[in-house]
Amino acid sequence: MIEGAGLTGPLKSLASQSQVISLTDARVQLRLGVQSLLTEHNKKLLEERISGWLGRPFRVEFLAGTVEAGSTVADAERRKKEAERRELIEKFKSDPVVQEIVRLFNGKIDEDSIRPLTPEEMAEKD
Image (cartoon, rainbow, N blue to C red; front, side, top):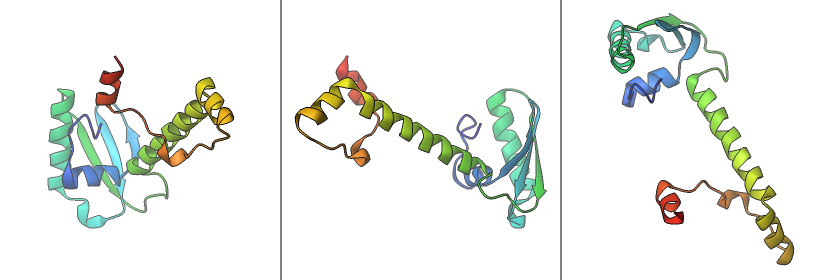
């Protein structure tokens, strides 16, 4: 939703550092630990951006309180990226060609060098 609505800058940060308490087709409840961000102005900006993206009215409700560790949108995104990275590394390491090259050259795989192909690199393959 953050990417789809094109949230950037402070609005993206606000949404990313929030804990989603509930989410429906028409409304989201967000808990924020920083009281100063719980403004009517920020609420309206989020509602406008998300409503515009969805093409229908969408309500945002802010709740003040302690945000549970590891429960923010940013935390969930970080976990997703880490899982995708682990999956990429495992796929690479289990590839028969890679395994054969490692065996032939008595090599080791530098996991830090493994990355997904860029769109440009994908186009070059075709």
